[in-house]
Length: 238
Image (cartoon, rainbow, N blue to C red; front, side, top):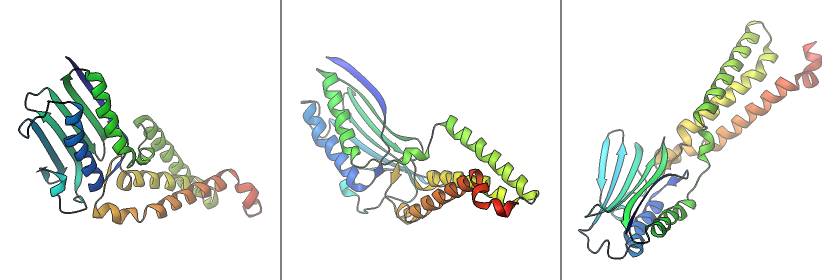
């Protein structure tokens, strides 16, 4: 018998009750089949769900008992755990809006590596159908810092041109600055790394395509007014 431990990030996903029900079925039905004899009775199976929002944490017994099809608007994270009575098996799945998702698996067993891989791949297979591209709105800190400095410089250039009465010249950098601002807004409030199906999410998501279109329009306008202004507005600038 050997021990296996792993902690790895999960893909960016959108969480709804359907996904959570599938995860719960995998945890309570499939995992015991992968490790025969480990969870012989309900007492040996310690399953817990912790839903956290700005008001505190709520303990749930099962998602089957969750009557509302939508999660609370104020939800910030969700923790799902499975342990055995002997503490020789621990599985923890965390979904956090800002930090993203992660899975931690620690247990002892024969053929432990093969069984651990089956568990991790089973979880990933379920999440794959609910994956999103939201991570593109959350670049690494270094990239975010560079983008922030770039936006600040563009804003200064645009403001300087406005002060000097060069309104057309100010438009290009100004549009770029607005585009970066929209990009930050979309990532911060609409497209978090992990998103939850809530009333608030559904309401805000209606404006997503409009914001993306606006952002694309600002970028295109910024490119034209920055690099091709002489071609399109040469006569006006003379």
